[in-house]
Structures are given as structure tokens and as C-alpha cells.
Length: 112
Image (cartoon, rainbow, N blue to C red; front, side):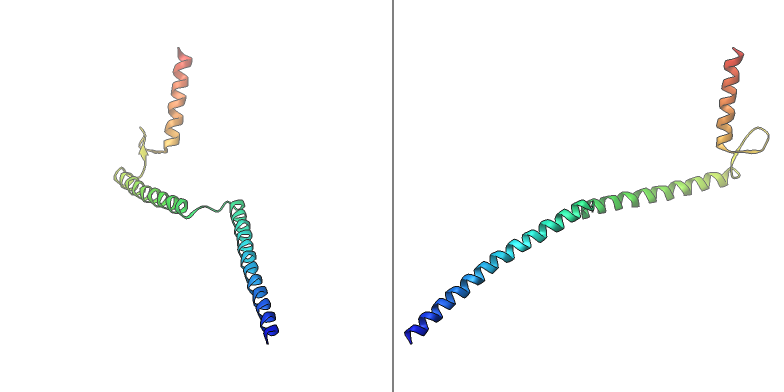
């Protein structure tokens, strides 16, 4: 009987050593997977959650400001008849008036 107990004791020691070794291997495998995933995410240029939230908040603020400015512009345009009015009662776009200013400035320089 003692012989069997010694064999069982040896088997128990061997099994517990194997379990300990497997626990170490498990930790190493987890660390390797973690490193690979971190490298993969870093290479994909995925943003952090706090950076995403900050940019989303900035976009929401910009959108609200744009809507506010759009409403002000609509109010100004509806109050003045819908456009910039030049001398002849015709509607002139801001681009045309800027071009006209440049032409006048060029004529004045040539006249001097």
C-alpha cells in the first residue's frame, strides 16, 4: 500500500507542477495576444474615446453656431429684400461688387 501512496504522491506532485506551468503559459499567451491587439489598434490609427468625445462636442458646437449664423443671415436677407442692392436697383452678388471695386481701383491707378 505504501508503494501505491508514493506513486500517487508523485503523480499528484507532477500534476500540480503541470498546472502551475500551464498557468504561466496562460499568462504568457495572454500577454502576447494583448501586445498583438495593441499593435494592431495602433497601426489602424483608432482614436481614443476621450479624443472622439472632444471632437464630437466641437462638431456639435460648430453646427449650432452655423445654424445660428444661418438664421441671422436669413433674417438680414429677408429684411433687405433678398440681396445686396446696387445703384440701378438691380441685385448684385457680393462677388460682383468686389470685382467692381477691384476694377475701379485699377482704373484709378491707371489714371494717375
